[in-house]
Image (cartoon, rainbow, N blue to C red; front, side, top):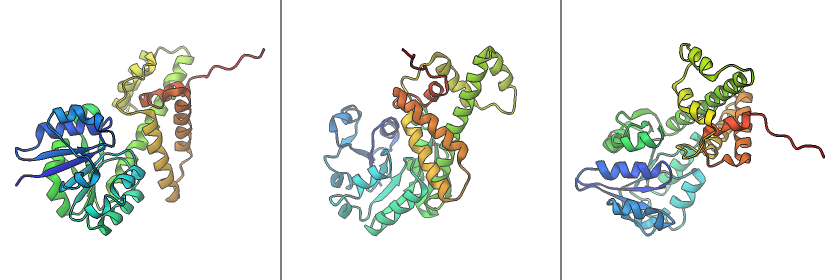
Amino acid sequence: MSSKIGLVGTGLMGTPMAERLLEQLSSGDSLTLYNRTPEKLVKLQQQGATIAASVPELLACEAVILMLSDAAAIRAVMLSDAAKPHLSGRTMIQMSTIAPSESRQLCREIQAAGGDYLEAPVLGSIPEARSGQLLVMVGANPEQFETWLPLLQILGESPRLVGEVGTAAALKLSLNQLIGSLTAAFALSLSFVQQQGVPPESFMQVLRQSALYAPTFDKKLARMLDQDYANPNFPTKHLLKDTKLFLDEATAARLQVDSLAGVRQILEMACSLGLAEADYSALFAAIQPQPTAETP
């Protein structure tokens, strides 16, 4: 039986995911895309995607993957007065990074409109999306998981059922919190050894042999040393958004979040330096001493 799959949100991650689906969907299956700016979909249309002129047209698909920037964008697009009547009998697969409380609320609203909802956020970036090696975390019931497993396996070989809706969103947000915290801690240590005259390679040689080492350090080392933050897989502004989401959820859970609040301030400073669209390793620039205005 052929399937008609939809996708909305063709940004940094949505585009390579769409390309992967176009390459790997079974014969007879189709991919329909929607973007408020249709010109952005020309390349994907040339690769075989169908373009929907409106959200109601997109909702002719039996399942729609959501890769929008945040929960507010999802609500504006998929729960508008024009879209809501077309949700009945359709499945929304939410794959962006949003808060668990937001995911649960979206689930309630979509179910109230007669639709079905599950979450499947991913860990990985553009290369993993292109190769189908994303780590897919699923918040759903077992029946939903089994139904949509073949689709999710196109994007990641071994999707993991975490629990009910909200649990996968929480897991993904916790991992993105680690991205910010680990990168900020590494950038601070790297800055410190540079200030003290320790060659960065000496620092790395010891670090790589220790239990403190994480592969992400080497992935970001050259960017930091070269101060080259162009062509990001994950921009600073997106990590800041996720950090704020985690802070809100963790604060509501009465967790101690002072250390992460410091990371948020560093990310905000990086954005204020004009690095919001740059790779998140740009937080290194915010940790460095900032030039002071000379007194006349």
